[in-house]
Image (cartoon, rainbow, N blue to C red; front, side, top):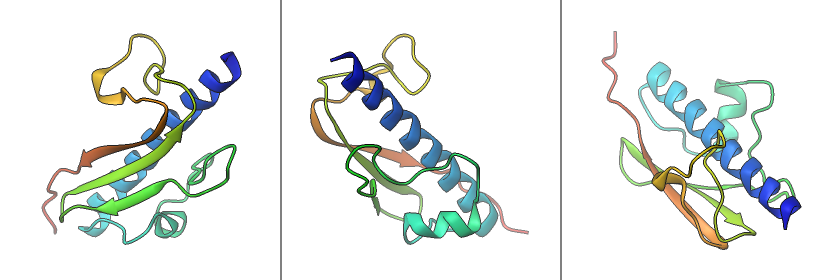
Amino acid sequence: KARRSRLDQLRLNQVYQISQAIEDHHRLRGELPEALSVLSRTQPRPGLVFDDPVTHEFYGYRTLDSLRYELCATFDTPDSVGPYGGAIDPFWRHGAGRRCFTFGVRKHPRD
């Protein structure tokens, strides 16, 4: 169980890192990426991973509108702490199985 909890913690951290890369992509380009693979070109960062550490399947991603999107992952345990550890932030709550998180980006004025 401890190993599965650590893997879920890693998944949450990776989803969080992807959300930050999407925010940066939107700030620089004024749009959400059409696919996660775009971020490897537009937001290259050490440690930015787009696939599950066990299954190696890409995390789910879909845009909801011009400012909102979902990132999805499949979890092994009923719940885990947020991406930074400590108390569980209600946003990061998940059950075992597939869970999608909805994110929004801020509207950035274009120069």
